[in-house]
Picture 1: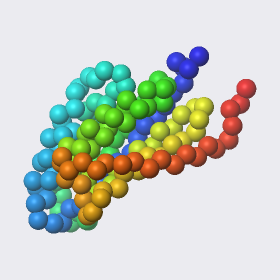
Picture 2: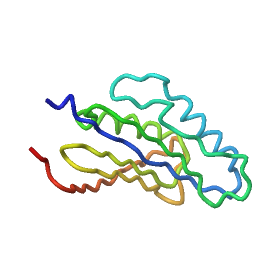
Picture 3: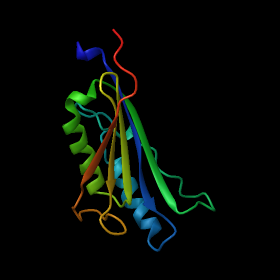
Length: 142
């Protein structure tokens, strides 16, 4: 039965730093991630999944990286809903690219990538499109 299958979801959202308005962009992004619920309806997209970038470290390079991850029970069966929640989050953030990896026991690893149209995506600007790549290593052992 598919209820025993573990799925791992992880990835990152990247935004450019080192430009004017960095603090405002970081505040908007932090607010979007912190607005996620502590507990969510299935399939979960919760605040605790996300790590906010450190903003008080000197000599950071050019990219803010907001990483996330969680373990689920067979989330691939509700994947369209999870993606809709993730894209809703992206619609409220500044970002250059985002990557989500979905590792499943039966159907391998799927990588979903979003690239901003133009130099970056701004909150509410629309135009979010995803590209998916699938890789399957090994086979199901029975």
